[in-house]
Amino acid sequence: MAREKGQKTIAQNRRARHDYHIEDTYEAGLVLTGTEVKSLRAGRASLVDGFAQIRDGEAWLHNVHIPEYTLGTWTNHAARRPRKLLLHREQIAKLNAKTQESGRTLVPLSLYFRDGRAKVEIALARGKREYDKRRDIAEREAKRDIERALRRRR
Image 1: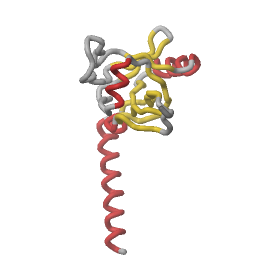
Image 2 (image 1 turned 45 degrees about the vertical axis):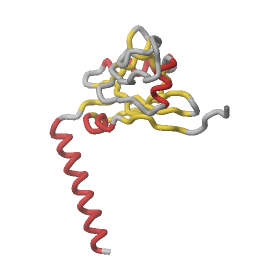
Image 3 (image 1 turned 135 degrees about the vertical axis):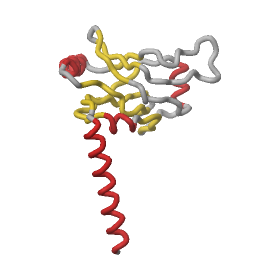
């Protein structure tokens, strides 16, 4: 069988871009079991409540829901188990230092296959306040209205 090429997106966390100011993004590999990979290849995953955490010099992804593989047997995985992230030691140290600052967290933005390997894009993010969210919505609606008016004018 030929090796996979390119990128296939499995899940995206659009809510994260709404709830957080994204400061920096990183691509990390995932340590998965066989049934998790099969479930991901079927396109089933949810990043909604997910977050990453640095513990004992290792990065872990928590609360990401990868449902059990329907054709799996007793070897099936737990749907919300913590999964280890594969990052370079320098990246982990840098992320650990930045998350120690108040208000910063690591959130997953997307889950995808790149060249046949499961990857997750995590972001160093700072939580938005309610008025920031309202301002972003107002700006987006204003931009939409301007585009609509320009189209009508043409």
